[in-house]
Amino acid sequence: MARGRGKASPQDKEALRIISEKIRELLKEQGKKQIELSRITGIPASTLTGYVKGTSLPVPENLEKIAAFFQVAVADIDPRLRNDFVVIDSEIERLYKQLDEGNQENLLSYGKSLLTHQKERQKIEKQYHSYSVYDSFAAYQNQKQADIVWFDQKIPYDLAFWIHTDSLEPKYERGGCVNQANLL
Image (cartoon, rainbow, N blue to C red; front, top):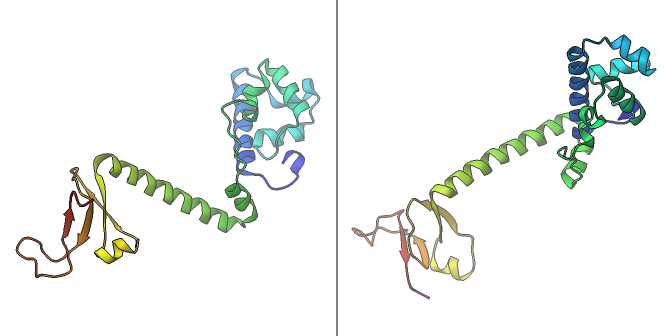
């Protein structure tokens, strides 16, 4: 991404934002001007403008000059040099980079939706107990997918099945669930 090469990764975009913000913050805190930074460091004004606007990443030599000018550590300006800045190199990142902008936004939206669903599920799992309920004994024997039912009490059971008939009334209603304990 430095010197305008290639497309910015999500990490580069975040680094651009943070570096830009930090340079502007240091200029303001120390009462310095961008032209003064350019003159003393020897970095062209147009290059510094790219850093301040967040459109280009500084090369290492320029980062060192900027840090020396402000009398701060290079890692205080560039988050990529800090231990707490996480760079993700994963299959999902590689896929993301191959997608066009519209599909990248779709992927991010879907990921956020999954995360929300996961957090909701984790919240439920803390408050409730999950139970596997089979459609029939044959479904259990054939290892068919069971429905997951959440209940606010711990119930000792071995197997649970859905009721599909009214013939067990009044004890069990149609659509209810019956469980059997100590079968095994």
